[in-house]
Length: 323
Image (cartoon, rainbow, N blue to C red; front, side):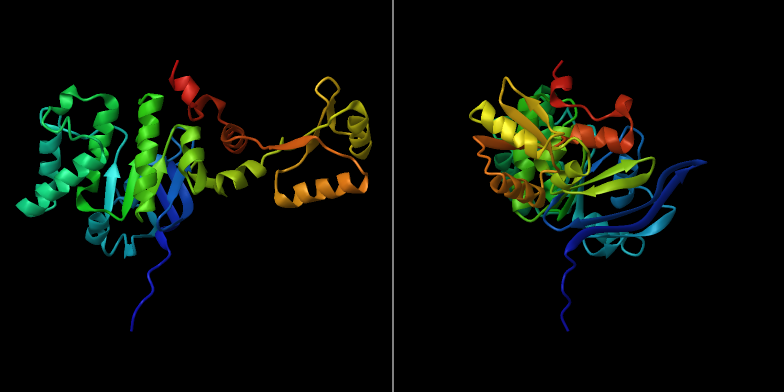
């Protein structure tokens, strides 16, 4: 009898964790499909890192059931560790060793043979564009190079699930985008990535699904577009060739915001296919011609602030980090 592998790489049900009287996780549920990027967002102190530490077997939950890579966290912690890789908030490379030596150290820890270890190291140095710096000490590496080496070290064990806890914190925009490309290639190869991040653009660019954590609870989950559509403020912007067209459309939507100088009308809408189809049908019925239209939805900043109400602890935008 054969068993069908679970389509989920990570499943957590009723996950709880407290430190003393402080409740960090208050019964969260997570479901992460295999071969995807799942991003966990939340204010500082919301429980993101605690979640990663539990799922990666570093600490035990107080309650709840967890399966990672098809293995039960309580009954098979060793199998979970063998299937995962973890890259924390701070680079774990040994700056006194060369990049190559750091990787070779990891092959020894994974009990790879000498020949297989060197083959794996050569492959990773090439994949992460570190060949030219392989014989240089990590102390001479830039921040972006250290993060690439750190992730390469995580991949020595060929994990099927990788936890990336704020992997691009402190990197410049160019290095951050290089990391994004690496993450996309990993997922294209079948790896599942569990990502926590302080950068909303990062989650928007990478994540197949996002969960927002606040006060130890998941307050929303879905794709980035689904989350954006939950927040008021979305609209469809209609532009007309002349004032007559604008006037005709304004009669159809008398409450819509109009701009006579730009010949535009802002019609409230969630950006979904249904609302867009209904809008076009009304335009056709009224014989109103539109020069062009564009759909505008709230961004993840709006989503985050609306769901958490934490403007002082919101994740950073790329522009803010560049200041």
